[in-house]
Image 1 (spheres, rainbow, N blue to C red):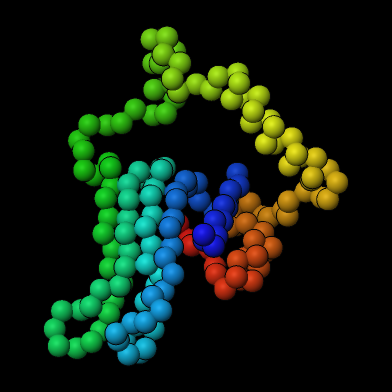
Image 2 (cartoon, rainbow, N blue to C red; image 1 turned 60 degrees about the vertical axis):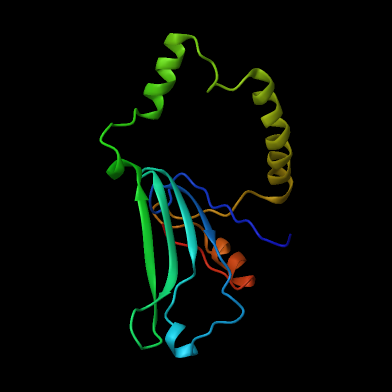
Length: 159
């Protein structure tokens, strides 16, 4: 409850990437001086869907030794580096399924029709209230997107 979800999507963003990033709130109490943790980033779990499939976990960890210093560390699993077998491209898999007569990865007509039940009201809203804000190709979206997150004291994560 009370957890916001933000979705950023576009055809001409700064990089072609699909990922899910869960960015955690800072702990309300840290057993370290503020100077020891002020340069820490936010803890995050990032699931990379494409182009470099894998999972990254970033968190603050105490540096070994007697000093009370905390640094960001990253644990990274890259699918392509962990397995020698190459994964087929997405369309290769779909074409193979067509040849085999396997329709599991294809939407049924009911799914397509239901998707329009979601999209039609959005298009009607845009017709009455204006289209989404535009942005220059190769950037990370419109200024309004940054302003929306800033109102909540947040900022977009750069992939």
